[in-house]
Length: 385
Ligand code: GLN
Image (cartoon, rainbow, N blue to C red; front, side, top):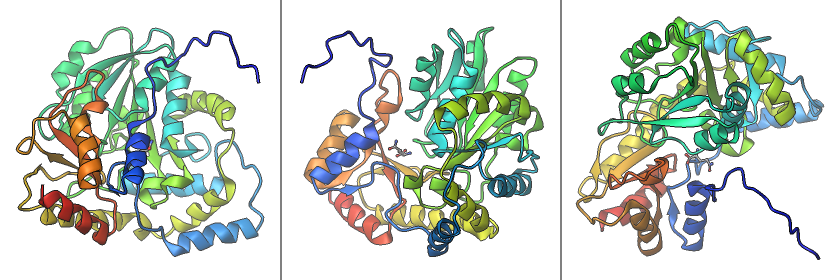
């Protein structure tokens, strides 16, 4: 077969395989416990499964409207009002997406033009920057500070310019497990007032927050809500990351642009699952139970690691716990993550990969969305290091 001999001028020359895929593959090859890529190793609710099969059997198997199934958008609208006292019109301000990553890509594509600057807080989840760059945008990096990974708003203020089109937030934060508080939101409100800056808020871990903290959605702050696209994930909330279903909310004027792109990217999302989730959401325990469920896992994992050489600052949210290994070795985090997988049978994610210029704080990210017995086996290995 002749092979293509033309010149592909890569639009993403720096992009390789994601760290999550690399580490999961390495975990499989070395038969290691996989606490790297964030996904649960337990199953979702049986009720949810039977609702999906019910709606398939009922014949909900064809395309739905591009914005998503009406019943689901209505359920989301009620949930946003109940959780954050925020009013979103199900017809014009809510869109179902094929996961949060698609929502993020679509929002950036709809809103960021060549030469626009987008403020990215680092460490940053890996899908933000490629989406900015594919659209000709320029990422402007600001590092989160301290062991709680808080935002230094003075630094953010310094990088805001006429060209700033967007700032991307993530709270609860992947990969650090940090959270933003109300004062962060108030500061952002002040900084963006009298500007055209759009806030893209990745809140996929909204229901996984610990120690009595409340999730500070940008939706709680009317001045921010007016300029924000907020992205959520049913995969995270219902333990079904492989279903790739999420949604985003935004004021009509922004959502209109989002939908123009959405219809060319995916057109619509899996219909029967949307009907099933619309029904499942009627029981608020389907998501409100998540705080205790995951706090229990975080606490259990930390307790099991007492006596190990790792330093632990408990995560405030998300299902990721950072472990500081500086007392064990001064190897680079990328090298130590590989060695941990190959020699000790535990896969994790090195934090330095979430920076555009690697910052190595000797920390690894471990996913605790796992059965207790998985956490026990993992801790057993970590405690003998
Ligand atoms: N969100 C998952 C994580 O942070 C990874 C998803 C993916 O593999 N792209 O681990």
